[in-house]
Length: 153
Image 1: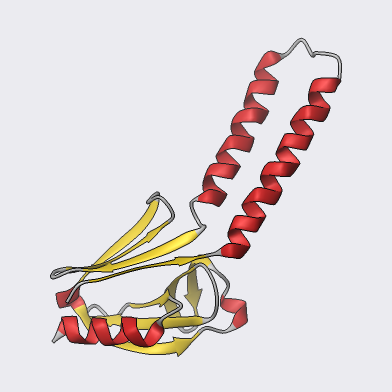
Image 2 (image 1 turned 180 degrees about the vertical axis):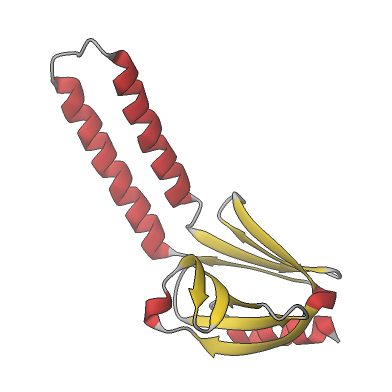
């Protein structure tokens, strides 16, 4: 059974746009100052700003794809992604994440698990044959859970 769904993080889009506005303002204000003799510093600052925006933009969405063989998750345009063999998945259940689990990619030590989430608190917890636990955030947890359960039979 095939499944493909993308959850958008509107909060992260707003944060990314706010940082972009701030960086643009800072760049304009720096341009109003007399030019410095060290152009390498200006380039480094601009490169760091671009890198920060690139990283923030990569966490604006989370896509979950299930095909015949794999369960794949991908943040944004794909810089951060993970795939699981469906044959390795032993269980799936709908869960609620605590607010303090946070968003994006997290490792949690008690209970030991990895969390992939961009928005909200709903998730599907999967357990693998090797004993590892993962939580995948979604805005349609029941549908994702049923698709995983159907795919691992």
